[in-house]
Length: 437
Length: 149
Image (cartoon, rainbow over all chains, first blue to last red):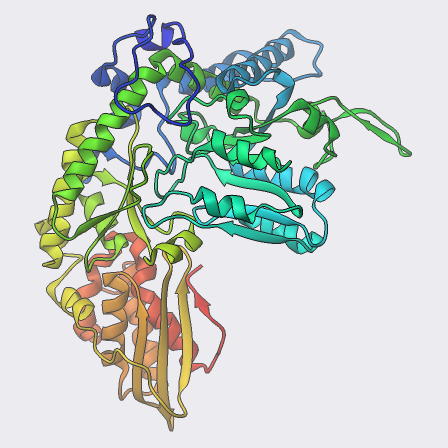
């Protein structure tokens, strides 16, 4: 384990909707940010791909795991593998303690008020589906409306579509500008007495746009409408404070946050969780069962039927501790430097257009190359050892809105380097050579 | 750049830039839609079959260079052939892309040999076969959308 992971978590910076303009102030306990040392914590980054050093620029799809996470998962299976919440034996006690410690870590990471407000689930998708199938079924009736936006990932469209079909409700779509900013004025105009929920991404996966979530919550709450945030792309890039934001629900995934796949969490205010009916039934979510009547367990266990992904939750806790050990000021400053460097590099190539130029962005660079399909861009970049995503990014309505069938997307993490962006630039120049464009 | 010449051969780039038979067919012709939901590629194949023979074939749509060039070259390869010949050619072409049964030296491939490089890129095989799957649906006179998934 590196010195970084042993460090105390950096103090929580003042809550913001996004990274500050310019380098964030360094916290007093922050270890100096050293990307070379950080890269040593990620075994996978050492390899070569097609004979070139790997430049992994597909972090918005899934981020790589530091050794601290891999070891935490492995430690669960070597030292304490057993079930949680029911064993009377030592191993189960250890497993339960480690699992619940991770819940407390997630609670602290989001600055939620209470551990009971954190439900472990498979990820953002399952978290949104849980809300749609419990709170949604309870509150959304025929003729009601749910507001989403043009920049949604499919996981924040389809669960609401299913709910609307089931209840006879309808979706209202808040528009964005050509640059990829949400149009708050238009969003506000969509709100009316039939609006039951505003469900939006904190950060857009395809464009990198950071939405002004505190302002959005103010607007929605002003009309008595609760807000769900899809936090999948926010959690890895900026400090999230659910109480400062004021949102009612916040969903995120572990694997985009340097943790294992198959684990994520839903934050919801305790009062909401108490009211919500259970979704899946089974073990662990009950207080007592008879054939006549079942009483449900208290929150959050009411929503965690069956044996959870214990190792995953423990790995997620380790991932959060790792990120906190590096500290947000260093992460935000480095990712902003990469974004600026990448924006300059891509802008310097003729025929390349960056898609998504919102005022506030995380380190995501979507782009198109004139006359070349993004999949061909992706294949040629792969030949340069540069891993990016090419396609519709599970945001087909957004692609339609922007008038492109697909884009290529480089999404940058704090372990990426300027040299890797230079490899991206070289790769794109070679795309243009191959295609003679 | 040289390492991509196997995949992006000049012939492929040429067909991508200036696809042949790239238009709709009017009149009483068969029509099938092909869709690759993973990448969003969509194309429509138009087919005029008379007495079991492909009298005319054309396509419209959008996609990556591999899928567009493959559609373009498919139209050239099957025009004038019987249904059985077209289907046999698809089997040979598919064999070239997905395994060792068909060697790039196989004379039945003709110009289609330029796609031999695709077999080193398994995720791109669907790009190269989308037009052919769609053609087969048109040959069978099926109206449902063909997807690669």
